Image (cartoon, rainbow, N blue to C red; front, side):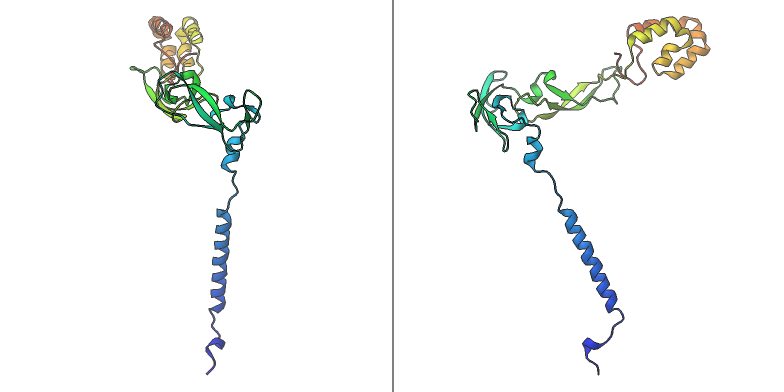
Length: 227
């Protein structure tokens, strides 16, 4: 009887092939998991000036020991230091590892609207009654310092515009309103066709539209504001 190791098995080559495919797939998976990505230091130092005054560094270029027990809206000094990889100097021209920063004591969501930027929604109706609000994500400007999270949520009124001019719509309503030009301009096609085939409602509809557009009651069909 032949030894067991010498017995020829038809599926032996197939097994080696299967193990080889599994090994190749495993190696490819390991190589894909090792990705080269920029370090955290490179991500913020890219926008940080080097050699400038420490007090003028952007907020994401420094680390500050902010305390929340200060008096609201009162100027308060906090101890800060530049982040790793960021170099700055003081008033004397010497490089500083720690410096004092004076800011107004208020949380980021309490800042003046000119000190942060919010996402402007173009899906809510500005001409609805009561006036609608939407949830906006706001980010503080880089040079503004405040307490708390620099990205926050706010409930803002719908105030976007689609580029329609009030003066143009009023001029069209006065001159060509009988042909529905004002309604066509505002994107209200059905009303425009109605005015066109009724000759402006025999002039009555035209006069009414002049008044409604004049006071701003009739606006763009997309719900945006006039510019």
